[in-house]
Length: 611
Ligand SMILES: [Zn+2]
Image (cartoon, rainbow, N blue to C red; front, side):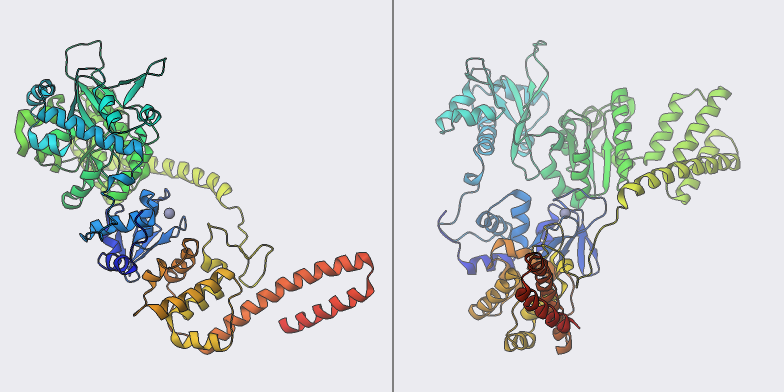
């Protein structure tokens, strides 16, 4: 580290970005009143409690309590140190770091992460520029992977020869124990490391920020004894259930395309990309996980699922659709390509424009399920037709919107040549059954979630009340102190009044913040609260953020201040009273009459003050 980054620079960086733009890269934000809200990237939630305030340039999650300014956001999100976070935001704002502070990006990464960047570069270079790579290049040509695609997806080639990668990485100074943990090598019984991937076309798998954390290698030879696809094993950084191929790039495209398109495999993502659909992603050879669904939901509710058109593909699509529906927060479109084609084959056969028409014409989940049902039954047979209609009505009963339900019923009636009225009667029956089931679930859940929660009135002291538990906001816990600190910072008049009255905050952290603010205001022209945040110790930042995000009025009266001060005094007297009562017990046990009298007198005195 080249010493502290100058404060003016930090402040320049902070003021030249809008926190909303930075956070929007990670969270889909919706404007609500003065704030923007979205799903928290730090804990899983169903209803958004993650709030960004553009005026104050703060974020705060009212679910898990995390909050701060733009630097803090990236520190949490990407596990960065403060200087790293400044550097990242500077990069976002296109402001060059002052000389001596630039870390050229990758040196701050862990060895395993760096190793992966180096491996990506190495394989890519082997493919594009070396003789050993010609084999890979021929194969890439056969799969119609042109130079721009090879570059965009950072595709490479792991040569046939033994241990080229390990030699390369050892030369770069990596240690064997790091290499062993990277997943890039296989370890023999004697401890020797060997390249895991050989004679394969290499597809890097990236994390949410576009940093490579693993690989998938496609076999090039016809040797059927080798697996067609080989993925990195799970490592510290590569957790399959949380990885989506092409996610970092796709989420950028999602903003202009308005959706993300989910595919079965990465060759489909690449085919779609060639067809101009740049928001394609794929789960890595496993069925979709809850973690992945949550990743998607943070970016957009609009998901189009386009799996292979063959039977296993459509089954998987059905499963995925059920998972999205269960979550309930998605606006889903489903594409089933004709002739059991996968997207890659379809684009080759019918071309780019036709493919995009398919995407635009995606089915709703209900249409998709109804279509699937239709194929399962022989509708020329009356008995089968009745079962089909029953099943179809059940499916329609899942739809929450009554207008939509009506629409499907009409359509079904028409195509089956039966009356809509009879189908509606069945639908009503089905809905009642669903409601009963739902109520049952809700009632059982109620028993677990309705435990009484002890929330003491603000005035009443509790033992150990002084330290605020992390999950509770400072405002709830200390309304008077929070309000007074807010006024102390935002109003010169209030501040003067408190200083003249020699008011001290009972909690040491609040008092420290008040003193720090005085120092900060003295040394900074036009002191701003978001800059102040970078000036104070990290553990105190939460108090400021809570106070700022509590939407307190700036107006106040002297009477209000007096009331808060009195409330705090009362609190502190309660504490002392509690303590005295304990002492009294002890004195009584010791039969120390003198002490009993003295303590009793004090107790009477305090009780008198409390009134
Ligand atoms: Zn949260």
